[in-house]
Amino acid sequence: MKGATTLLLIRHGHTVGGEEKRYKGHMDVELSETGERVIQRLTENLQRLDHTLDAVYCSDLKRSIKSADILSDTLGLKPVVIPELRERSFGRWEGMSFEEISEEYPGEFEKWKADPLRFSPPDGESTLEVKERSLGAVNDLIKRHQGETFSIVAHGGVNRIILCHFMGLPLENIFRIEQDYGCLNIIEIYEDGFPVIKLLNGAAECLPQRAGS
Image (tube, rainbow, N blue to C red; front, side):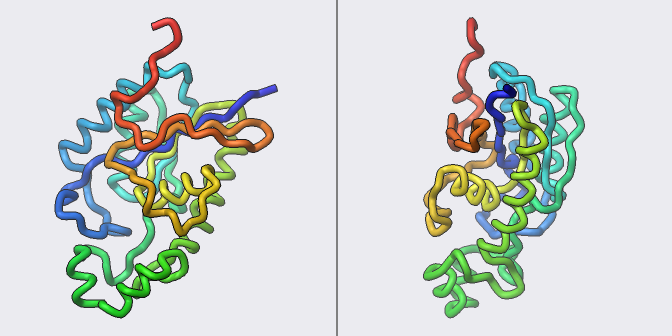
């Protein structure tokens, strides 16, 4: 018996301009110095876990790749890029703030608030579309790493979809789950497919101590 499969689900670190709270989506922004430091600290603290990390995966956007590089370099691994893990596309809303969208696209913005599951921003993706591409990739990785521990370094929107799936929550609740920059979620999936959330939106300092330490 292989035992449980452990998924370390991480959101990339803080990005350049991240304090402005604009929808980034497919915009290929860089990690900030703060973001790099947070991921480095998280990586160092991951060594306190009772798990040996077998693989690291990330999206094809720079902020995810850089975060995965920091994680992988410290642990002696090489990240594997999976485009299906990239953040949702916000289409014409990308680069805009919450306030700017509500002013320039009032009709679409109301539809977004009323039905975030099915509504897609102009030229963007709906939550259901992101679910279809991202969960397919995640399920493939779980099958590949049965009984092992692997990490996915992704994005706020994608992480929330993955967490809703494993928590059995309808996707309408997606925005009730917080995902801070550089946060860690620990999910154990047992052989019968039953998932247990061991840590949600955790910072590096929240990691459990290694047994005996």
